[in-house]
Image (tube, rainbow, N blue to C red; front, side, top):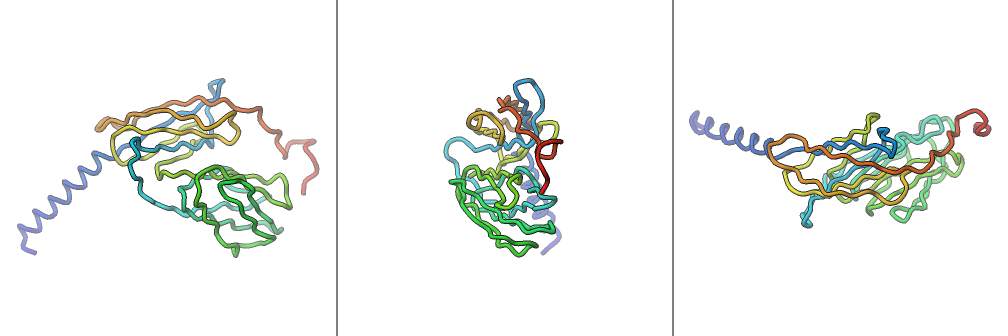
Amino acid sequence: MKPLLRLISLAGMSLASAAAAATATAITVQVIDSSGKPLADVVVAAEPDGGAAVPKTLRAAEIEQRGLRFLPLVSVIQTGSRVSFPNYDKVKHHIYSFSPAKKFDQKLYSGVAATPQVFDKAGIVVLGCNIHDRMLAYIKVVDTPFFAKTDAAGVARIEVPAAGKYTLSSWHFNMAGAAVEQAVAVKAGEGATAASVKLTMKPPAPDPDSPGAGAPY
């Protein structure tokens, strides 16, 4: 390629990259409970209004079995994604789900040989273990690729491709009622759009590891 043409090509690529960076933006979400306490492990998802098609940016997920627990406690994936369930405990586990969004049963096994599961229906999936009743985990399967999970400060950041109107959905496994939805208008060139959500929680379940909660497995 001649030097002049190469310079023009590089300039065009730079302009395209700058334009893409200018249109891409984000939504930052602060989630609290009814007393104003930040909530961790809240799944927040943004869907563009108007029925616009969303890309399938499938990312495989992993839920470990370690210390007689599922880790992480809460996962969020897009429909069609695969999840693997490696067992790093010295004992075997028998994991299952009776949830309408995904019913499956993986018999007693150890190690990482278990076949990953494909989650092709949106909804909430509750995981359990037939051997260890205290083992629980939650998978939120969403149709959109624009999602995140709140951190210890109750904050999540969702990267969205462009400005526009979105429906923001917030869900916690211990909330009272269905997921909370709200409209969010993302404006171009204004950085991250801030949103706040308040969720009403159920009374917390007793900690199975607290004194007097029962004999360990």
